[in-house]
Length: 244
Image (cartoon, rainbow, N blue to C red; front, side, top):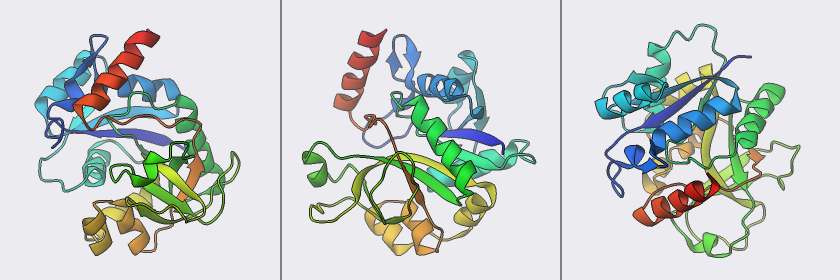
């Protein structure tokens, strides 16, 4: 099966404007993510963006990029437009990576891709074990609840995704914003209206569950920090500059 990796990215993030072009070790965050995706070596990698500055930056760093329209309500709508503009006849799976997670683990990207191929799932994502109890309280961190305990081999279904405190629930994990779709599933997903649950919780994966699209969850080895705030960015910058 052939996979295409698409990274949606835009400059107008509410909490940290201009986020994709913030530099770490002299390279923009979006170009770091592109490099990570290419290292995973599961298929071609393209960025989908509405901003010419991101187009220029990605191209300057040797990446592939597609300019999309500005009106998209969600990143998934944006990746679907990019898929249509890309020559996608022989693509089976679309991996949607977040443009603000430059510390994403390459093994986790490969692991999700392998599970999708092996289990022929409609839609898959990743979650990690919650080791820090403050995560339960943190509404900015999304939690996935699964039908059974995650391990390195299984790929159970998600029952729900929540933001709020749910300490007493079994099989609750820290959800990572990475998705892998069968091409047909992605097409169906974007054809549905945004659901009530999705709008209320600001979680677009609830649109899938509300329309009976099953989401399978694989256990990730790591739990990368996403960049939502200036503090997040400075923390990641420190880690990455130290590693280099």
